[in-house]
Amino acid sequence: MYRSHNCGELNASHINTEVTLAGWVQKSRDKGFMNWVDLRDRYGITQLIFDEGRTDKSVFELAKTLGREFVIQVKGTVIEREAKNKNIPTGEIEILVTELNILNSALTPPFTIEDETDGGEDIRMKYRYLDIRRNPVKNSLLFRHKVAMEVRKYLSDLDFCEVETPYLIKSTPEGARDFVVPSRMNEGQFYALPQSPQTFKQLLMVGGMDKYFQIVKCFRDEDLRADRQPEFTQIDCEMAFVEQEDILNVFEGLTRHLLKEIKGVDVDKFPRITYDYAMKTYGNDKPDIRFGMEFGELNEFAQHKEFPVFNAAELVVGIAVPGVGNYTRKEIDALIDWVKRPQIGASGMVYVKCNEDGTYKSSVDKFYDQDDLSNWAKTTAAKAGDMIFVLSGPADKTRAQLSALRMELATRLGLRKPEEFAPLWVVDFPLLEFDEESGRYHAMHHPFTSPKPEDMHLLETNPGKVRANAYDMVLNGNEIGGGSIRIHDKETQQLMFKYLGFTEEEAKAQFGFLMDAFQFGAPPHGGLAFGLDRLVAILGGQETIRDFIAFPKNNSGRDVMIDAPSTIDASQLKELHIKLASI
Image (cartoon, rainbow, N blue to C red; front, side, top):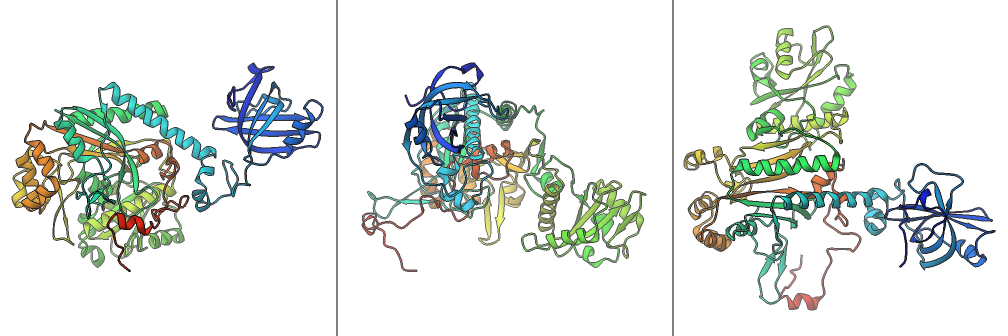
């Protein structure tokens, strides 16, 4: 064997033990007559000592040739370390080396393999295999493994069965572009990579599998950002003979289990709010409830007061920001500039200082008296020492702008504490949303989401008001999971296709296999999918998912390490019956 122990397990109890270790050279310190080498593997660091008076001369001289990241094997005796290092588990001992074998030399790495490295993100992405040697990335991958194992344990204990579904499937409209794969054996035809295993898990319910889960890769060809990758991982789950409450209870239990086992955090029953309440109170459907700053709608107290900006607005809405009543005019102007950036798009912002003596000072004192401003303070729950920020304009756009400001201020004020967890359910989503570009309704989730039975009559008269049996789990301002009760009978599913603008022929071409399956006794069923990458990042206290993915893509969807995507050989194109058009 290359090693009898790893580099993180030896301690004072092993003194005088003969050991064999293998790993990478972290660093060496040559003092002439004495040479110390830190040997690193996945488990930790052990100090090696080469002593001119006690080490064989050939071994001693060979040790002087070691460079950073050389792969070596050593044999020796565990001895007590004179200068002890209490910061590492192996800090009381070192290995007096008797044998040294260089297994592989190494080029000098392009950045230091340290927790605090000198390598920028681009260079570390190019040499990701070196980046993984650093503790922050290594520990993130081990953390992901721990979360995945707890998921499997929890669901398996509840009789869920893990089933693999295909990666080469039929292209179906699910809200994002498909990645497509040409078929060599079927000329002119293409597979698609799954955006989710949605139809397959429904077919598993038809097949009687009852409780299914899968930790599965999914693919969406869409624009990227820090928390989005073209390939991502879901904890995909489905259950038969269930109602919405059953699903919420099971996956609330899973999340509570992960918070307890992974973070040592106990969470009581998760709050539940409706989609309409979330949008009205927080301006988005994935609110961060670790802090307040809930919206206060001010139309009643702000309009018809000779201030034309507010009078012309569909919505006047504000938030009370705690403890910033002493902001200077320069700080306030900087925030006004922030909301006027193109990414936010506000035309301006009104502020009100809530003074400690109970009076108010605003940027619109010309139009509003102290009683008016007092009503603003009551509506936004502002207290002395707070500042009220107010936006106005079209309702949906203004709520989105204020939501962005709320999150930005919470970040600046340190209110988004990574070790504090506030999960909740958002329920009663709209079934359909109107798309101005296409001029028709689209499914807010997917075409298989069941409408609430009591809203079915609205499909004919007011489809935008139909609520779905759909739900999202939100954690710390991030949607970490979502799902719905599915349509399980052919008639309702055909009706849904009709309202989504599918002709009978289109529906049959896209989903005929599912409609056929429903005729053979489909049970009531529903499910949920967690985004594993995002869930792990949040539990790990990070905002982005990249460090929790072994080999991530950059913001252009490129793997700069292996240089993918890339062109393919002309012979491959010919074999696939593909001809590239000139651009």
